[in-house]
Image: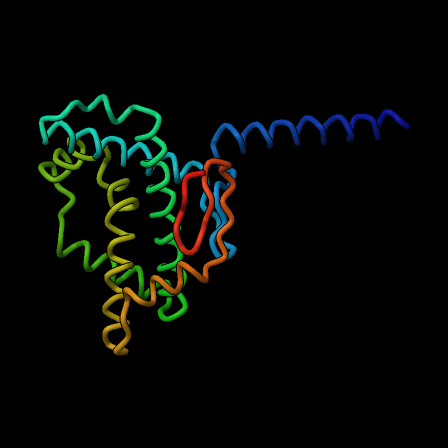
Length: 193
């Protein structure tokens, strides 16, 4: 082995290790595959944090102890519900994208959101208090998935189709691979093992 070959090999090994570290540190690895679409760990973690913030606020409003949300059973259920929501959002968006162009989807969603909520100081303060998010994060995690669902429901209504039945069938027929050993996709639902 020449010096040049050894240097190139060493450089490749170092770059691979740095790449793997970056990949894991930034949580870019998948936690689930939904019909060949990836749900990345960082997306799930951000949504999980939002779900925890919202659950704690809900318990406080109800006058209950917000600390009970931290018990392992509650955390497992919140994680399950968060992953399942991301799976459903992925199924809906994929079907919507098969019927409309991405530009049409984006334009309609932004129009719906613009009619519903404004990006101003009061709104941002309320979002921060309730969800623990800035407006752009709130839009990405909460508003856009809901807008996509509503757009798809409207499209199905125009075609005289039933959204609820479509969703049940689509969830059952979806090819879902969960990479978290605590959960399994069974008959269109995410089950805790």
